[in-house]
Amino acid sequence: MRRIVPILLVLALAAALVSVAVAAPARSGGKEPRVGIGPATALGPAKAVAGPARKGADDSKAKPGKAGGSATPAATALFADSFERPDGLITNEYATWNPNGASAVKSADWQMTSGSLFAKGGAGWTGVPDGCSSASASGSPCTASAVFRLNTARHDFGDVTVSTALKLQRLVSTSRTPAVAWDGVHVWLRYQSEESLYYASFARRDGRIVVKKKCPGGSENGGTYYELGPGEVTGFPIAFGAVQQIAAGVRTNADGSVTITMLRDGATILSATDKGLGCAPITAPGAVGIRGDNAEFSFDDFAVRRG
Image (cartoon, rainbow, N blue to C red; front, side, top):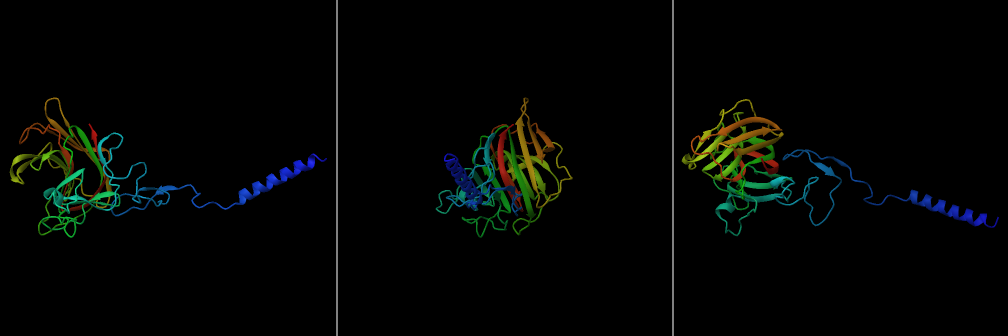
C-alpha cells in the first residue's frame, strides 16, 4: 500500500501539468501563416501572400519563391528582373545622356534613350506619360515616357525568348506625340542600336500585331522600318487593365535567315522570317527591351531564356 500511494501522487501531478499545458494561451506569432491571393493592384495581377509582412532590415515585398532586389537570374534564365525593389526611379534617359551627372540615376541592368522606368508595387512602370521633350533627373515632374525606349545593358543575347507579364493601363496623346495607329507596346529583339533592331508589336491602338525590322539609313530616327512575314495582322484589340503573358522569340536558321515568333498567353499568334528584306538579317547578338508609344503600362517578371 505504501508503494501505491507515491505512484498515484506522481500520476496526479503529471495529469495536472498536462492540463496546464493544454490550457496555456497561444503565443504571439504561433499561428501558421495562411497562403492566399492578395488583392489585385493597379499595376499588376493579384500576388500570393504568405502571412503578414515581418518587420526587418528590408520591408520590401517579395514574391513567393523569388529573391528580392534587382535583376536576379532565374533558374533557367540568362537575365531576369522581377522588380522587387523599393518604389521609385530605376533609371531614365537623363542618366543615359548625362552619365557623369551627380543627380543621374543609373542602373546596371537597364538603359534608356527616352522616357523613365520606375519600380512600383513590384513591377516595372512607365510612370505617367507626358509631353515633356526630356526627362527630369529624378523622373519628376517630367517622365518623357510618352516616348518610352528601354533596353538591357547587356548586348549578348542571340537565340533567345523574351517574356514578361504586361498590363497596359491606357493610351494617351500629347502635343509632342499625337495619337497614331501604332501607339502601344512593342518588344525589342537583337537590338544593335537605335537604327538596327527587330521589334514585335503586341498591343497597338489599331488592334493589329506585326513584326518589323529596322535597318540603318532613313528618315525614321536614322533608319527605315520593314514589315516582315504577313505584315500587320488584325483582330488583336488591347485588353486594357488585363495582365497578359507575352513572349517573343528570335533564332537564326541554318540558311542565315532569322525567324521571330510572337506568343500571347502561351499560344503562338504570329511568326515571321527575315531573309534579308531592306538589309541583311540581324544575326549578331544584341540587347532586348521594351518600347512604348503614348502608353502607360506596367510589366513584371521580365526574363530572357535560351531558344
